[in-house]
Length: 447
Image (cartoon, rainbow, N blue to C red; front, side, top):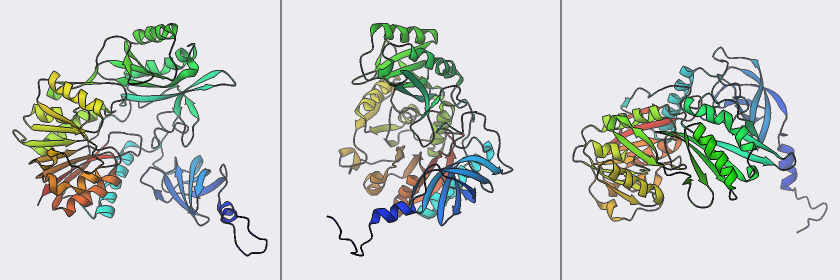
């Protein structure tokens, strides 16, 4: 409806536009502290600024990426006064690539920051401090990533193919030249990939590429239209040259070009876990083994105990638990992964009951009412709120929670504590060095 002139009504849009900070504007900021996501925080012009690439105590020239009311997102263009802790990033592309946002900070400082983030979240959101802080689990800080998704985009006007990682806060693609955190086995494939893809007849139909290093290396090509026989032959020759499996992903599930099994090993428990590209697999193989070992150590002797593993995936925890004598029921939401988990148990000579269920909906299945000694949770970033609210029905003596998001861990920890559990032990899992991403393990004991 039109408004009459002189009505005295103020249009919301006009005020909103006046309060906006223009994208691209440059401003000098004094960084006060770090946000939990690894960006520096500054206050200026009556606004709170979140600045990537900045450290506490620094003065930086920042460029506005976007804003909403009193909050502004920005990135560092130039460091005018550097922190004594600042270092030269090990990867030259870190200022452009959107992946590793803490490479300019020494490894020890990154670790301390993540530990503090975890403690802050538990204290502020849940009012909890563990009876014991476990030492952080750490590993190699470079060359650890065994999975990577590489963006591919066909430029219609120039008829060229862009291949690389997504830029920070942008749909732009940073050319794939190097990646300091990628495992050495995948480096040659990643570096040769752009030239190969540009030669394909169907280059414009390539959506993205995934790389994986397990018991074998694998290359998955996602395509929106059927690739020609010539293109498949070219990709097959490239994969063979790099001793890698080739998988194609058009409509439906990924398909291996040749008959082959993709898997990763958990050597301490003599386990081989088959997977497919796209399945959830921890990206840091060495730390994954240490994480599983710590989980078993924290739980102690589980021989003959009934263990419920929720968000169980391919059996990353279920199979080691079964190997050491637990009676395991594994519940996962993705049907395909449930089937592969059951096949993995059988292939490794283990008895694990594998069940499909939506763990974000109210739990009504028969297994909810069973008598459980141990509950293990390894949810995605959304956490396990629904499970936590029904903990009294599950009634385990112990709950081991493996988290990839301290914020949702803290939220769920408050729910768990309210149902009669104490936070016995917690510790950081540094699964993603050079990033602000923090994983954690927490053990709750029934009072």
